[in-house]
Length: 171
Ligand code: FES
Image (cartoon, rainbow, N blue to C red; front, side, top):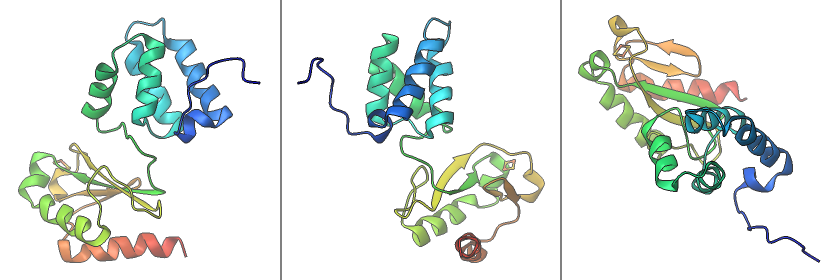
């Protein structure tokens, strides 16, 4: 017989006991700190890999914050994601130099090939597309970052090869 009224969650991170314990530990360790929201969100993004809407409500309730505030922070900073990141990440630099050098055309190409928008992950969980700020390689604009690898002077017609390379790494 159920003795406590536990909310029914659908998010894997809140159902899985070890992931839930990690979230609870991060909340407990930091909730009393000034600026707790940022510390908690960073910790959860790093340990769990994403912060879904359901997790945002859970965090808000635990911190005694309005859900709208947590949601505002998560959507403002691009390093927070609401779904798990793919195995590989391609970031497109949208700093001024890269923008001027045509990063938009490369983003369009990526969207065409993969059928997803920046901030989304392919259905097979292989690739996540993200936008990022200047990575300090402006002289090589337009720049993308594939996992940790900074690639400059990227051309839209060479981009399919980038995707191919990632796929072939997976065998
Ligand atoms: S603006 Fe893209 S690397 Fe600086």
